[in-house]
Image 1: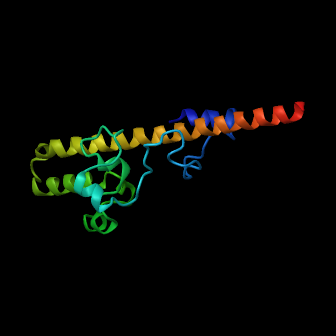
Image 2: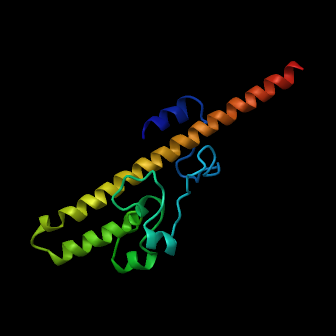
Image 3: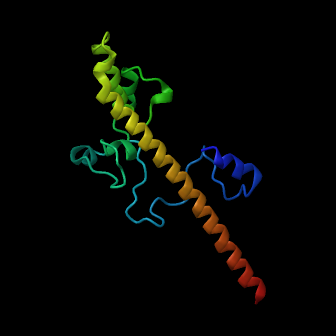
Amino acid sequence: MGAHLGRRYLWDAEAEPDPLHMPSFPAELGMPLRQPRAMVASAAQLAHGRVSPLSHCHCPLCVTAMVASAAQLAHGRVSLEQRDFCGHHLLRLLRCQRDNFPVPWGCHALRHAWDSCQHEDYVMRMKEFERERRLRLRQQRLRQRGGDSGDSE
């Protein structure tokens, strides 16, 4: 992820998106089946376990919708840094670690599920960042073509 810093400060800073801001393009631009990330999963998504077909996580909801509510995360004493799209996996892991205290290896499957979800979330954020960067470059190219054709007439 450090490559964006070099591009941002040494080359074309206008095309480089700010990682701290939301995307400026519609979610379905260029990909009609793409769903934007939701902060809360709908009841239909929870019932059917359906979200984006792009997810390779064991839990397909964790990449595109928040499954655990803020109240559940607060009740489970999850730190603010860890309250993300994989919070429901972390809640299960923390509960397992509490229940199996002297045996840390008893929760290996839950730890793997949480790590996999974190990795999928990271990959999805990088894909969204790269998509935003490419759409900004495309927008710049279209402006230049429009400006060049207008000057030549």
